[in-house]
Length: 102
Image (cartoon, rainbow, N blue to C red; front, side, top):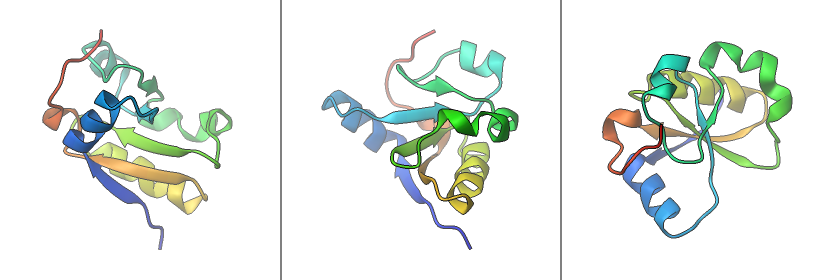
């Protein structure tokens, strides 16, 4: 059984406002990501994560983001099973309370 943490969109927004450096991974598809994302989020679509594992560092914590929290939850579980330190942003971009970059 893998374990990963959860964090709310409001918590992520507050930490970013405080200047905290977060490693955000947006697992949505290209067109969703292009429509608006959290500033600074890295884009790795869910289906590409296995092929792009080399881009992630097991020493860092990652916050996974998608539209509603479902796909990012799957990504969080998959990565946690492989020893990565991840949190799922519950509610996803539907809950995002701040501005987005395009």
